[in-house]
Image 1 (spheres, helix red, strand yellow):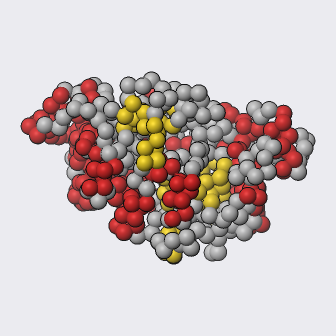
Image 2: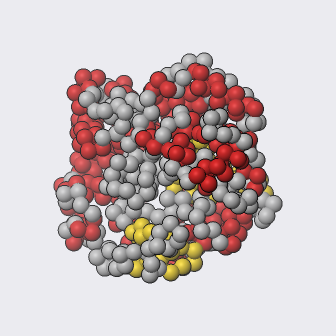
Image 3: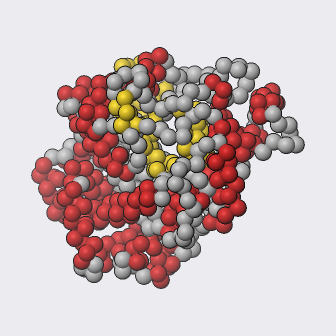
Length: 523
């Protein structure tokens, strides 16, 4: 990525090379330990990407998940998800035995993630490894751990304390903690640090393992020409260390409860809109600090990822503010966001901004102007393209290069599942555009081909579409409680034949990167 000047404004940006990649959350990787992780199969997936001529891996958020298992509702905007920690690596470091791992996790399903069974079993196993780590059996690792804690103290101290207190308070939301802990009274926090010292250290240890493993995997991917695209939700979870430790930066009352929350207004799809419930930022106070929290968050994100997709980009121009007392989003109102002021500060502090703007949904001229001011690529989703309007902005013939095109996203049905549910007129429109009929259509790969051949600089396809899977492989259904984020990829489907076919398409449409060579071996 190079620093260039925007044609729209004299601002720094990053140079998008014509490239393609695959969207896959690490939890979906194959592994024998109940969930995809940062271990051997993650490295093999990078090898598959290289063999298939892909130079992008979009991983979605990697934060510590809570209720609902969604990485878009995390306990911290800075921390990593301990459930993704590689058990194989811990065994290799001498902190666990194979027998201990098999006893704890060996009976978990491999075709989906059973979070209810996984979470207590894996955290208990990780605690066992922590006890062994504390015994001093790996002095080199301990030295690295102390350095990690020192380098990340700005966020790690509050996060580890938050998690330890949460456990001591029965796992409930911080709003329901004992008032002196809820309100971070110094005497209460000092006593908690003493009484919960081991648990606090345990959560520091988990973050050390996660970041150590993730940075090694990212370095491997980068070395082989694969860039990592991550994801940063614009809003943070109400039950998070971010809000607990920075209440003055959010619209909350004296008990820490939100007074207004995030959402989107009523539209064609929902007569009552969507009430997300995330607390809203006090942008005036953020600005008064030079956006210090946002600078720290973005700096952290850009150490995790090469490129960052900013979710709900329109909220930086204006966001839908809903009274916390309202059960729906109907009574909300539009409120101006920080706009260009925030991005100028981020640019001044961090340099080039390798950001993809998630600009789906209701996009007004002010949102588009903000995106263009900083020359940020937007998004196109092919599943949104079809109907009776040839000017539909999601149809490929209407694209300009500064976009990232997807067949669908993690929030959509798979392309095969989507196609089976279309009404007859829309289905016919899809076939006409593709030049196919019911007998010849290969809908997942036909849409993937549309994306690859388009002028969009990046073309990204969910792995489920590469594998031509149906609704049973859908990753997330917005608004549905439970059953999300559980899909797992079988190891055997990532075949040499599949990689060869995808590589050929990538070459045909000019997305194979110079110097891309097949890996000589797998880890």
